[in-house]
Every structure is written in C-alpha cells, then in structure tokens.
Image (cartoon, rainbow, N blue to C red; front, side, top):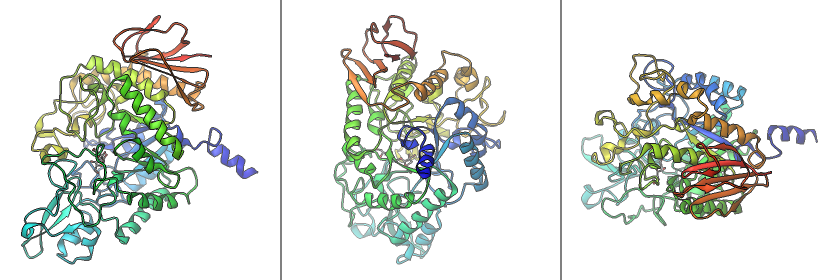
Length: 557
Ligand code: TEU
C-alpha cells in the first residue's frame, strides 16, 4: 500500500511516467555554452545555464555525445564510451551536472552511439594493427574487396556521401581488406552479431544508468544489423542515404535490430525511476517506426515524419494521424520534433518554397524568406506543443534562430562537405554556437575576444537570450509561455486525446479534451475565430480573425 503511494508520487501525475509527455531540449554541447574559453561548449557551460532551461520550462535535456573523440563527426565518433572528452569536462563534472539538474527538476538523457566506434577506438586500432586474422576484426566488418581486392566488397553507401567502405593498409605495407562505415571513414561499423560487442554495450548502458542518467538516446538505431553475406543494396550510382524511403534494405531497419533493443530493455527494466530509451530511427513510415517502441523494446522515438513534413496542412495532418494511428497499438507515446543538429533549422526551411527537411545536410540551399519562416516557425511551435505525447526542442529554436547558410567554406567541419565533393555544405549551419547576450560575437557563448568554433552572424545581436528575455513579443517569450501553459491548461496538462475539428481547407484545428482547442492557419486567408473560444496564447497578434501562418491556443470551457 505504502509502496504504491510512493510509486505514484515518483511518477508524478497519476501513474504516467514522465517521459510520456516530456518536453526534451536537445543540447548540442559544443555549441551551447563554453565555460573555459576555448571556443567550444562544455559540461560546465551547460551547468552554468541550467537556470535558463528551468526558466524556459522544459522537462529534460538530451546531451549529444560528450565522450572522448577525435571529433571527425562532432563527437559521434567515440573512442571511449565510458569517459568524457577532456575538452568538454570530466566524469566529476557530469556527476555535478546530474546532481544539479535533478535538484532543479530536470532529467538528463545521454547519447549512445552503438553502430560504430571511432577509428581511434582501441578495438579498431588493434584490428588494423593486428592484420588479417586479428580477433578485433571480428567486431567490425572487415572484408576482402572484389576484383582481386581493388573494388569495395559491395555497393553500400555512406550517409555523408560516397561508398561505405575504406581499404586499410596491412602491417606489411600492402593494400589490404576493406572495412564498412555507414557514416564517415573515421566511424567503422560494429558487427552486432559479435558477442564481445553485445557484452561491451551492456556494460556501457549499465555504466550510464548506474551514474544516474534518466534516459539514453539510441543513435542510428536502424543501423545495428546487417544482412549476413552483405549483399548489394542495389543503390543507383550517386544515390543519397534516403533511409526514409528504404524498404528491405540490407543495411538499414533489419528485423534483427530489435533483438538489441530487447536486450537493452531487459537491462533498463532492472533500474528504478522510469529510465527511458529514445530511438533515433529514420525509417520508411510510422508503421516501421512503431516496431522500435513495442512494449519490450525502446520506450519512445523521434518522429522524423513530422520533422520532414512541409508547411502544408494536409501533409502535417497526415504525419500526425499516421503517427497516432501507428503508435497507439503498441502503447508508445507520440513525440514531435521540428529541428535537430542534423537538419536545416525550421525557420529557414519554412521560408522556402520546398519547406520539408532533406537529409543529413544534403538540402539544396534554395532561397528563403526568413520573416515568413519565423512567422511559420512560431505557429509550428504552438502546433507541436499542443499535440499529445512528448516533444523535442533543438537548442536555439526558442530564439527563432535561422540556419547560418553563409559560413565561409574554410570553417566547415561536417564530413558531408568533403565527402560530397563540396556539393553539400552539411550540417554546420544549424550548429552555430548560441547567442546569449551582448552586441557582437561571441555573444556570451564564450569569453570575449575568443572565437567560437563556428562563427556567429553579427545579426544575431537581436536574437540573444538577453535581447529577448524581457520582450513579451519575442520568440523566447512565446516558448516560455507555451511551456508554462502546457503544464497547467486542462487538456494539455492531463494529456487528453486529440479530436480534429473542421475549420476548412488549410486549417489544422483540434481539441484536447473539452476545454482546449488549437487552431493553426496554414492557408493564405484569415480564418474567423468567432465562437472558437478565448485565446490564451497566439503566435502573432490576433483580433477577430486568425491571420495566415498563425496559431492560437484557445480555452473552450
Ligand atoms: O544520425 C544519423 C542517422 O542515422 C539518421 O538520422 C540520418 O540522418 C538519416 O538516416 C538520413 O536519412 C545520427 C546523428 O544524429 C548524427 O549527428 C551522426 O552524424 C550520425 O548518427 C552518425 O553517428
């Protein structure tokens, strides 16, 4: 009896685990806040800004990889999964971060990069140095090339462009075997059929759960199994890594990936406190995605169908309905996301004629109208935060930051830039360090006179946290207001089901319970709000009508 009461209190609202409705804020650590003046964001920078996140009103923080890494892919090339890169902090700093976050009521999610290691990981170094037959080669995919060894073993491609295979030089100096890397050559893929690999990651999952993290994001989840024999995928020459379209692909979204998730779930179920696994899975539609969040697998998932949808009522409604319909049968909560460290920021996307997200920095940089994009992004924020389930925010979207599309070529660091033969600029434009305060770079991100690792545009002086904090019409104030109301308004706070209302073409309108309505006008004409309820929050000034590209939250009872 007492146990039940304690359990109920720990779960918060009724028996609903926190992650079913959480708003999770993505911290791209290198670009969040720098504490030591080296121009790169770090753990102590994040610690110093926890009050900002509490004031913003998010429930949890997901921190991108902070492990020792040569940084060939911004830290997604991990050389030790159980330590912190000295440039970013120490394990003691992380312990302090966890304690301070928990004391402030924030949960913390870490990133698990299990598909590949860094090429500098001790295993891979031993695999290369040990030559053919080195036992460590069995933990990766080392294969002989075709045509006497000169051609890659198959036609698989890298997400960053080009083939997914690189050839090593053997210890005797001869050109030797090839190894698989679905991402950069500095990120060799692990073979998840190997027992040593499985056991190593069991230990890593336990390591972070033991340290007290509230959740684990599973990077590139659909990549964790490959068809034995590694047959050709049939990729056309020059094909892009369009995993959202792939069906029955030999290196993506294989059924065997689910065995890994079941294994991890058995581990996390042994821990108290509602730990959560979040899958990062770009797969062909919501039905495939639902397989990642079956009751004995990962708990939740990012929703790339929503992120990729264009600014168009029918497309967004299809993404929302498809998500709700696919996830309900497996009992997983829906989640919604508009931006991340991998995609063009949505202020910029929504100002383009083709406003859906592309793939891994391969978007064509078509002209954008940033005023229109921001107007739509503000409406999209109210849409996202009014939907059932959870949501992910990407740092800086609460400031209305656009993509930085004019970074000088010599500062670009994303492997996509080189791998695409300088045809795709990659993802650096969404990773520019945050502007906190002041009139010129580095805008409080790092010590004055220090250059951030990517340059910030001077125009961001109007978008700093300090510039927006006390302005009730700012994008920051809009997010803060929405996040507060989300915790208190009937319908939102109790995660009531969604019911659509028909307000005509180009309008998304839905109720959450009997006392809350959200109306988003994606048409090009004003929509009357007569009889729709009392507006409690709007994304732009509203009178009797809701203007185009505007959203309203209304109290209806
Ligand atoms: O993203 C890669 C990934 O698997 C997909 O999201 C990819 O964008 C999609 O399949 C393309 O259709 C993760 C990280 O978020 C990214 O930053 C890393 O570069 C990558 O893994 C490699 O670790």
